[in-house]
Length: 81
Image 1 (tube, helix red, strand yellow):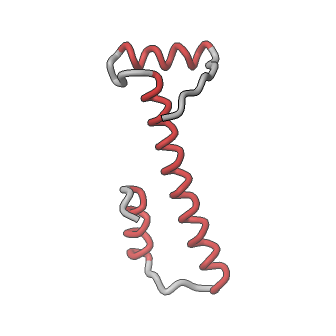
Image 2 (cartoon, one colour):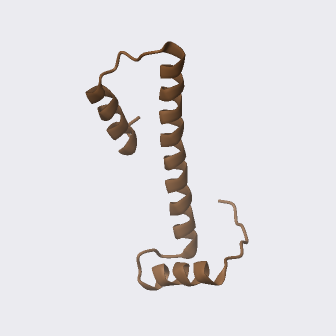
């Protein structure tokens, strides 16, 4: 695992410390890694929606019904796609 040195603003440092002190996380590194995982998952969701929109725009229509699109969206949110 790579080690990095980063600087936080005072409010962010206090927030990170409070999460560790409350034992929600074991360390600030764990918090940062969790935030990065969440951001990556969110970006994957955005990319999926963007791809669906591009496909729909390029084809004019989709054969997927409302329920299918909703089910696919839910699967993505649950990390199953």
